[in-house]
Image 1: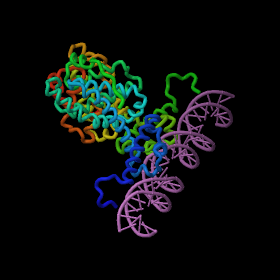
Image 2: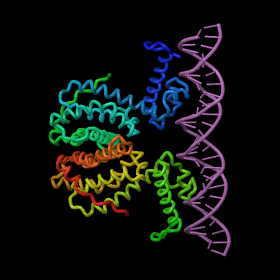
Image 3: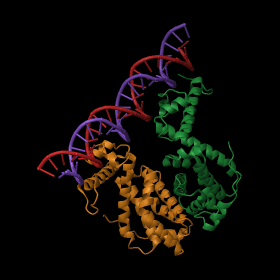
Image 4: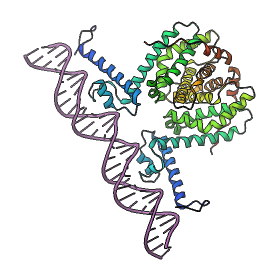
Length: 212
Length: 212
DNA sequence: TTATGAAATGAATGATATTCAATACAAAAC
DNA sequence: GTTTTGTATTGAATATCATTCATTTCATAA
């Protein structure tokens, strides 16, 4: 079909990109409104203004589409957080601020309530969206002698799940939201920060999260 | 119907107990064999030798039945672990042995592979089945000055999810199973144990897990 | 202008959780 | 022993979607 036109975006390609984005946006909104099980593929394709079958040209299953939607939501959050943490010098503070904000957003923002439904998807999304930055911070903090741990990826994964579980607990009311700072302290403990230092870091004032 | 017969178990009651147990057992076996989505209510009721509709007199949904099955599996594991840990004096060792064994079982025993599928159900099951003992150990260790943390339930919940995430990682190959001991060290770090002491505790020889 | 193949479409399919009207049965009443 | 009564069982029927696929539409390029 297209033989020699490496540069420009053809009309078909543009349309494809539109469809893909529209589907993800619709899925994101609907899942945030009604939960994953409460959202049907028809709902999604209708809101995206796309034929039912078309969705399957872009995503091989509902699960894949929902995963993409959650990932996009997480990616946005990560970008907003980074705007703030880029102004920090201390990698430990970056890490603490990140967790504080992720957990607070996940448990406060009504749109996030349903997105937390599938823990493993959320956990994977956090792993991918924040991982590169977070693991860098962890390693830098360790080099500076502030953190103690062995395998970054291992401890990072455990921290993510610890946080996700906490979010679920707060979400369903089994954990008080007042414990947020303490939870961050616990997460810092997992990477070998002493309790006192962890409290000091977690209690530093947190600049507000900007909209994008 | 039954007015004055507080003591004896009537024939109907016995049958009901049988049905309930048979359904849970069948669900447990089938989910272990084929996963949750691969198991239908028909499969379960057939193996339990019970009419399809009957299951709904005992469990209001497939999810509830599956949850009960997972919980029962976890409960059995907890009992086996307790046989060993009842011989330990050091509560920190009890805690470490418990985690070591849960994670090893979950990632080694083929029956557990599918049971880990629904993380939140597994996490809740761990919370309930091990919670009373684990939180007791945590508090005792804290009283003895070995652990440092504030809210038991909070840190216990975070530890559980950290462990569940790890199990999933090992299960899908993204985390090496060699890291098991280190993961336990990380979990000990979350309750305020120093890195060196955590390594010492986690490395102690572990007696084999008995069958029931 | 026509030819071509990729993309879109939604009616049909298939799979399965759940319901419910009919039936069987255990326990109490006589 | 028989009848009555209320509860438990049952599986055929229902309802709900995810997914497929034969058909149509459409952008591209010959």
